Image (cartoon, rainbow, N blue to C red; front, side, top):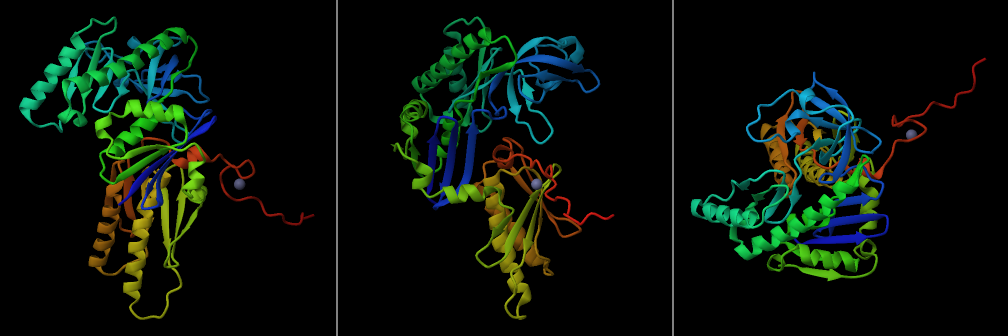
Amino acid sequence: MAQQIIIQQEPQQLQIAIVEDGRLAEYYLEQDNAAPAIGSIYRGTVERVMPGMQAAFVDIGWERSAYLALEDIVLADNTIRPNIADLLKAGQSLTVQIKKEAVDAKGPKLTTELSLQGRSMVLLPGKYQVNISKKITDTQRRKELKAMADGILLRESQEIPLGVIIRTAAKDCTLEELEQEFLWLYIQWTDMLNRIRQVQKPGLIAADQHMVARIVRNCAHENELQGIYVNDSALYESLQQQIPERSLRFKLHLREENLLEQFQLEGAIRTIHKRRVHLPSGAELVIDSTEAMNIIDVNTASFTGRQNMETTIVETNLEAAKEAAHQIRLRNLSGIILIDFIDMKDQNNQDLVLQTLQNAFKRDRVKTNVHGISHLGLVEVTRQRTRAPLSDVMEQECDVCHGRGRIEKQNPVVR
Ligand SMILES: [Zn+2]
């Protein structure tokens, strides 16, 4: 599989497209007036403390209140979990980070544990700690990494203590590489600290400016990545700094033109929110999302001939399973997803379709589970909620029907 990442930066918006074998596989859109993005840091004011729920509503200067649960409040060491009413008071000001983006009517979820993501480490301001990824299993190597991290952290005494998580990517890092990465995160943190002191009203302190680097970093381990194309020279330079040279198995290209047009992705982007997806066989998927769940219906094409009906059905379902996984990843659908495949009598065929669906999700970095077929013949899938679905980013509710999708008939007036 050949992969490319296309990054198109414009004054009001940033678009990132991940292309696999010439096809749009993932799409990210960030606009200036956007809803709070995961990783962004805000100044907040406590609006209401709810002891019954052990949570509080926090005004972060956005149209909807954000939600802070007791478990997401960092406490000093050895503190027994108190009542939230002892920790927060209405009107209190605090610095928070977006942990989960707003979904439907729910506001964003906050944490007071700030973290700055790097490639091989995560910087955790507030508490001295060194945690090492469990995926690094070699005991000797863990000791070495712990000693290196302690050395880096203890070098200078900080006004606010700092901690780090050593990520799996640090497995083969030298001390110098870890120091460089620490320095890069530390500079970001001190910049942020200055802004935290300046911003008094609820509002954005630091956007997640490193979304681009994070997406790139997540893909950079894959041997399939052939190139990253950037249209903006400032972003190009910042990416060169953010991604350590040795991980650049692919090429970073600067091309100052409309890359989405050049890679012929505009058509695919426009169809992201279409309800019907046509399959080469003539069958189609119909995708509907409600607040509670997403439903994907598989519709048959008109069958040619009556022979081997079950074979035709299985072939259509296999095609639909692959496309459903593709659409789920592309649209970033999350939570409960029900897929209504065409009914199959044979248990083996059912298993084959489930297995194909499972395999098709392997490229998806977001955690997805295929739970099997329910009594009514629906395939149940759950996908972790991280970023908001693309429909939230790209669409707004219709003023005429208020999201119902139907309007009153223009009947003659009955007198
Ligand atoms: Zn409408």
